[in-house]
Length: 635
Image (cartoon, rainbow, N blue to C red):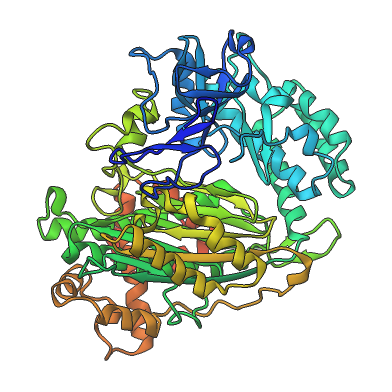
């Protein structure tokens, strides 16, 4: 191979001839997908390095600040002691969608950042100032909303000044991403942020100009209140999004895999059995059970079933609300629901004296599209505010895919991520631990008070595909390597959503054959060409035929365990009347909620009480007198 040819190394440590030409997609020797990791270089001596140079015999300098790691399989140089500058990146790991991560060092003083806003060809995404005037009104407001949400976590670490530098703010479609963190020696204020926004607001689209000017004017006041500003900006964001059409289509399936005999995954929806369920197309769920097939498949099934019951009730209550419900209230209610599920599974573990790795549990990734009724800037009413709430626990993942990019929306709850969040290790070094991928969170393994779910709110304002999956698909980065082959045909209308689900599962069975796989896809369309209003009503809570059939497919041992955990579950007793079944379901769910209250979830139940105090009190009155005393007082 001639010396001036650009080369990149295969990451497969067993590859006998790892050298490949830059531009190749897979290794010519072993067919492993090649990793192109473009890094952002920051430091005092960066400007002295010329494009074309090679640093440390591995980094190809594309521009002075954009470097390609040609040996991505090797651990970068990482200092033993981590500076305050690096720790700021680590502690913001949970915000990885917007914040780059420390990768390593070169020449001792040049910090290399991965996950920077650089595309797969080595070019920066546009600055927000360059993209502003071409963006629709809803996207302009959405960008400002994201910046405001980052204000508090960055302020706590003394790096909020990073949000005051327009060129530091880059945009990848809907998403605001920072080039780097900038430490500020002086205190930053909301007033400074408002002043930074003023030139953008002056060029905002007409439907939102006046409202944004009013908000920025308040921000520039020394007595500006962050919560008040956030509420106003949220109301403007929802009303702007509600002017867009929205069509959702959901499909999902789960597969045991070629090397397994039991399937510990549960997903919703699952094939065509859920096609008449009223939760569609608003809800999608993937759970990956742990604790052996006699526990894992039960835990995942219990989680999906219980969540569906609660989400039906939540959606019904929300559609009856006259006022906009703020994101923090919805998040508290979702967290309360998760603690209920957690404590139901945890109680089963305790009753059966399951300890350590034998405790059954499940990961969870769930998407809830919230159809709030809202007034639009055109003085009309929309039945949908385009909000999407994403919940994750464990290592099941969510991705957002458009024709131009694929974004991972969740962060795994594993040991490697924990070490980064605590400021103890850079991510690449943490991955070297033998327990790097071990889970630090799952539903049901610990009491609800120890549960820390991540709940995010997004706005659907562009056409795309939301993919939820278990690690049977996401392991070894096969989604990142292959998303175009499966997402683009769906977006172009040449592949059905159901066929795409099957194709993803086939890929998982070929590449990660040792595990079960679950995939749920939601095709989100806001283009005017696809105006199909979502008007499906939400009927009373009931167990569907598909759920009954799903339970009947459990192994005999798992079926017995399920009956021990939930003896009164309606799916295990088909002789009772529907009315009685519904009453028992309410008892089961509410009792679990009150047990969780004792375990420390009063904030979540308080959210339910605020959403519908009458329903909450009526339900509490059905419980024993001593338990009723735990309910909040009647208004």
